[in-house]
Amino acid sequence: MNTIKYILIVTLFSIFYSGGANAQKKCKVLDPNLQGTYEGKCKNGFAHGKGKAVGIDTYEGLFNKGMKDKKGIYMFADGGVYNGEFFNDQMHGKGSMQSGEGILKGYWKNGKYLGEDKSLFDGYKIIQATNFQNKPVFRKMGEGQNITINIKDIKRSVTGFRINRFTSGTIGDIVYPNGGVNAEIMNVNFPFEATISYKVPNKSGNFDVNITLQFEIFEDGNWRISADHN
Image (tube, rainbow, N blue to C red):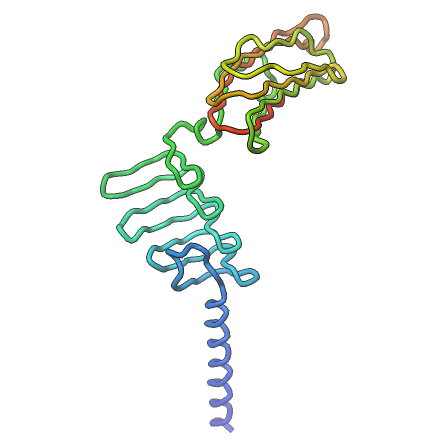
């Protein structure tokens, strides 16, 4: 009986180990420089979650559908080490790169180093924002050369809207839906800089507050700027 139990235990262990090894082999890492061995979490046949992949290079951190994602450490075959953020399998976000030339800190976008100025990563920079309770929101909506400005006020009484200065493009229709403002600047060239101004009532409604927004957009695209006063 002891011999039979031993053989059964060994057999079950072999099946379990073999299944684990096969599962790891089926856990795909998309970066060709990391295709070799993988240890970590999987989902639907791809590295997903925390894991470590070793190929020509080595990566330890988070994966998303087989791609490097969020936070991780990437060790290049030449000895360089990147410690920081990833997106869509590329260095993307804040991080540091250590190599034989020293340490490089700052922001990367789509694998390219931009520098230490976060505005270059965001694609825009607010130069001046006067009397805003809520920070204006800048969002790239896709490819193009247009900028849309949306302003809302809970009192529905935005007045005196003006685009005082802009470096390129053509001002389209300016409309006042529900007392707010929708404006568009079309066919702009980037980098683009502009200054807008308008008025909104103070909380008690007994006088108007002057609002000024000066900004610069570095990255090509269709952009939407939203300001919500309440």
